[in-house]
Length: 478
Image (cartoon, rainbow, N blue to C red; front, side):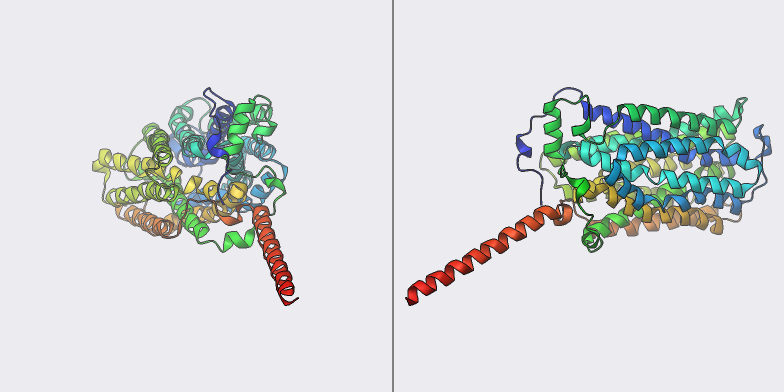
């Protein structure tokens, strides 16, 4: 199966279009949703330090690890259901409702903390439940809105919102902590912005080009001819058996799990590492913790146009490009983490450089596994993202718990070295599986209707051929 045969004749609109506006809205949505997701990682340090100038709580390392992992207990449960809901009722509605609920939950975090860390865990589970819809919904929308010739740049641009959101919340948290609001202000701001974005997206967002009120006919035909998504994909049954027997799917799953393990290990534990090992104060910690994510966001816009250019010029096949950029995004950070394991408080600058590279170069994966769902199946990109992101989310639960089990003394660099080595080993294994099994072509099960039609034509042709042969034989005998 491939793209529409008329795709090559599509006229590309030259001006800023509806697809770009939708991408900007989704970029902002990723920023806001990562505010809701990351605020606890930034706040956990001042929440447990008496010098932060706000209420503080005597939570040990194990308690904090449970708090940081509890988000993913809910997150993994709603991935597949969210993908199916987005396919059935429209990703716009599901994403709008989920972001609104997540914003409301943010307001209750400061109150819940007064009742103990278990209350915070409950809120984080609920936040995870609604946040589980984000990636399946965004992938569903991108599969409808992004032409395959622009898939690397526009999709990566949208998902870079996760990195910019992480960086913004971390860099601004230092100022918020020192303001009159203290750490509770981080949750109030996250909640308010979530509600504001939901209103904007409900007003301006669209599920697909056909339902957009501001798109031109030329742009609509251009997008619909180059997405590879069936116009009737909402009515197509998900080919679960074909997906779960596809080697390409398992290669994609491995890459997704490897990236997620490393990303969330560093995201949830970096503020603690910088505070305990590198001896940085709250404000410096917040500033430097944000640097790797700014680097990652910027590098998204470096890797993605290079990837699209190499593919569109025919220099690399889609499959080769996906594997190459995913390897850059996991194996270079693996080397950085090995080096980081030997850094001490006296080597702050070197440690910060390695951390920045370890996270920043992960951006290459956005041109690798992250768009591969749409390569394999534009019609079922959302449900597939639900599957891989849900299973990868299990690693997000395990990773902080393993950190809590490995580290008994947060100031011991040798214990952090074990954490970094484990992460590097997972990067090595998971990307190797992607290189061996991954593909970048549309799979036959993307459109079972066309498959059925092809099989019917083949059967009819064989039947007609048999009938004709029998008739000729009878004539000969006569």
